Image (cartoon, rainbow, N blue to C red):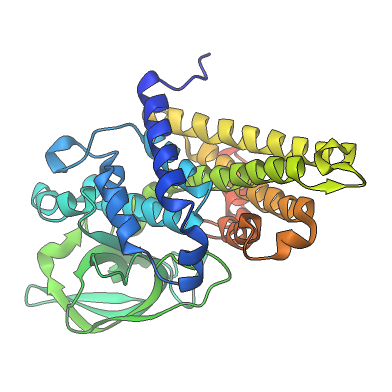
Length: 384
């Protein structure tokens, strides 16, 4: 078994880490308190080619493997989870559905600007009345005279209101089949009459990521904006979520590693009773446990990403990686605040921001409870 990254992946990881240290680390706290996505940073990420990593060169990408994308997300999350989720959502939720399920015309039209980072896109699945129960979609779309007429609303949609957002893809009920809702995915360009982006949310964390509620009131788009087969929108998006859970696991590992790094630094510099606090066994054990959990979470998402690249089943492994990594991030961030004592509660110290940012990882792209349900199903246990 080979657990080493390839030389190309190692070089890429170093490049991204240098970019993070030079361009993101000095500004992360300021950006967070400005509560606005820093478009200059997004532009720099685009220039580095991060938004096109998993896509073929013909669409403006670099044809890298999925693990390479996860490495980029992890490196950014060590310092700035808001920018890490911006990248993860832009690639996994905004661009990937177009690449996976779009026609060639749709790919040629919408994918290149996303792969180069010229544009961002979002995916509207969650609704105000249905979070984990995503199949309970109420947003509707009826076909009339060659146009989809969409009515409804979506919640918590990342990258939906930036200056460079070009469209969102939304799931909507387009009919019934055998007594069940027929859910399809439809692309809605920004600026379409009847489509409104609400005010940015006031969130516990991820302060400078872009997140909005969306509303559709007799919003009309051409029939050809249907993405994938009619009635396959929900099923297709579940496939997208499997990859997304691995990427969220990578983000969680990055956050946890950032906390470990900050604790090692602080415990080596801070003194009490005449010596560095890192010399006290209580703190050594605490930081050692943080490192153990972080390394195990990293191996979990590496394996899930490898299985995906090999074309082997990975739904259970993706859920396991997301579950363990997200809960690890919350645990490690909490302990990092404890290691820092009173300073851990002060915004100038990165672990304070990491603690705020960690909780959403147990919720977004599938709650911890849903992950446990998926794992149980994959084990063959009877449904409740």
